[in-house]
Image (cartoon, rainbow, N blue to C red; front, top):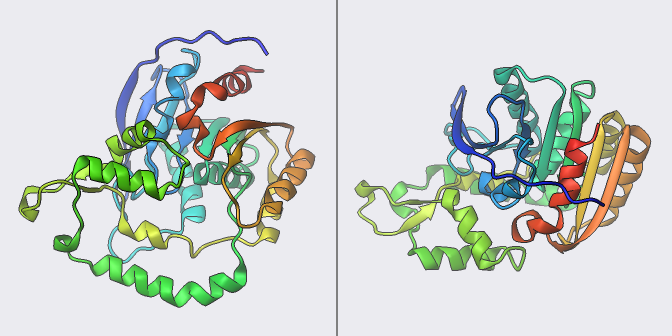
Length: 306
């Protein structure tokens, strides 16, 4: 595969108005071009693409957003749940309508890849192509475990919602980095965590009378997995997808609870989508952040092809 020339893209912070506040993002490249919409994974943020975007050709424009409750984007109002696999379809639609885009291109990692999949299935005639990084479609959870854990999830949600700000834990900078590094269990390295935490943590506000940093993301995101899909639903959505698809799977990548789902979804996409390009590339679940040079050429070729 031939090398693609790379420029140094401009980058600018943007804010998109939504009914509950703003969706924040980083726009890489020309503001005069319709960008690729890039969507990060669960509890990450737009910084997830900070290392990949500079490796892509200058003519590719990318808008990487912080999903609601993540990074610099507004949290949902009190009383509202996050149903992430469903909310994301509406969010993408809001952004598309706000900018007046047509025939869009999506780039998503993990949850962001699942949302790209869902949007492409929901609006099959309005998506040109999408790239999914280390996920095929929405995660399928064991329905028996989901039923058994629903009550605990709701109580946890109510606890997080009423947790006073004074109880919000604060950490020193290195302590915060180490905590996140441990939580990701080898999927990211120290430098990658620092990239994510540029948007993922914030200084404790003065009125808290605490020194240090707290997580910027909404605590309620920990209870965002109630609106999960069954395998049958995911495959039905896969049947609706018509656009070109690039799927890059990390090796070892993510350890999925139901690894056979990935193959089943890809089988359907090979039938329904106009084109499917699939690569297995050595790397962790966050290979686009930790080792972006391993996938940048594949991403560039797919985005630039006719």
